[in-house]
Length: 283
Image 1 (cartoon, helix red, strand yellow):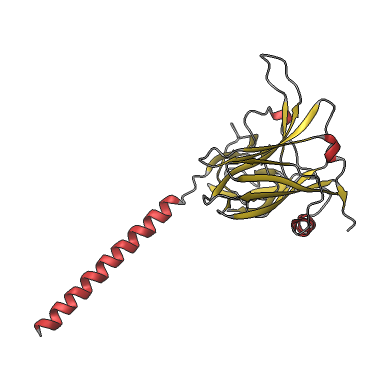
Image 2: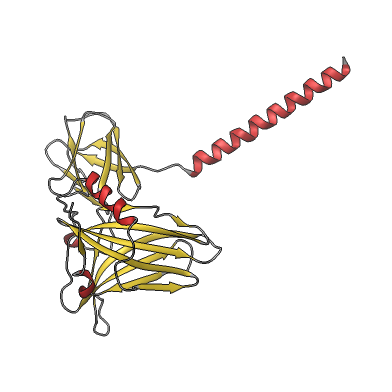
């Protein structure tokens, strides 16, 4: 009887300890993934514009009192307004093409609504925020990007290499108003490469002393592939869909790859002569 009691007590102790540990793990995981919502005030007679750096993939409204739709002809601007006056507090969620999740806490305010909110680079003026124009459906862009990801290199070697990490532009394609950049990141080291961001700019070739270089960031319509990490001794092929463009004289395109919490930053400088060689996709 004494042995049974001891076994029962031991079992209860282990069960309590396991439950406590599991609870702590759950709590820690929840805290680590908590996303703080943006505060957003909207009204009935005015429209709020939300400008994202990537095309909008999904929108979820917490209440039918919130009206939301993408702006006509663009992919990265969401129009939001109140369906009726003085509705109760609700929420709005948006997912963009780069996989980022945006959460908003929505309140009604006739006196001081938020009229425009941009999530692009804060160094850009509102006039320079690029709108993502596209005549193609997102499903078609995805289909073309998936096909391009499997194609062989079609451009002369255009790459940058640093600390056993290489960034290469393998191919350029165009269909309708969309250009596709086939990029490859190769990690020859044993240290995982965590991607902070991969960005596209149009920049001046020269700049006068003591003056800031003029540059315009081009935001992708769609990104195909894993843009979070390239594991050690591995490679990753990414396809970026950009709105069609060419480069003015005395400018070039810079493609920047930045490592998260690291110093293995890479850059490609693309000239207009390379861009006009983009291959046309027939269907």
